[in-house]
Image 1: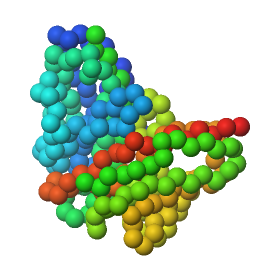
Image 2: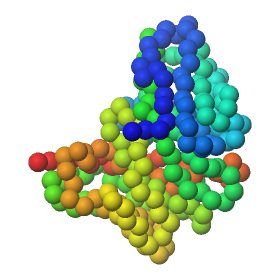
Image 3: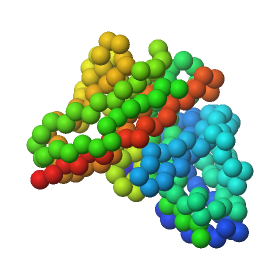
Length: 117
Length: 112
């Protein structure tokens, strides 16, 4: 059982819609991530939040807007998406990002399958 | 960034031991090596992590040579349910210094 919960599991939206993906974890992790995964491809990093502050933005288009309201929650706001944005969006968390200790252990949710019509 | 290279696919039979090797020539001193398993339409799941030599847990072993430029994930006595994509990930996330990237992964198919 995953300890990172993502909602909704499936989302279909039009190109003019505004929707949000939500992610929640209660493991006390202070780093949270959004990844995008296309079929038969590895996950691609989109955003990293560390201690509720955006620390990495991998040149993601502005139609994707992340938000970290608190240490347990992570949202991804979607607006004016394109059909090519259809993908599995994965949320992950980890214990720490700061300092020299790079453990790389990520805890993933089950993902939100997004279809843009 | 530590780039990783893995075989694209591997086939095996139930009950066999499977070894998947990952190359990471530019691994940094502070980088760890982590392996993930992913089933279709699910998030990756942590398998094992190590820094050097050998690490073993209840599901796998990880062998890392002294130069740390490669690592080998060993799955003992695989079953059909081990059919999945396996990713080697090197590094981690440091707000100041960098991040790690998933390689293309190895699709393991276990046959009866």
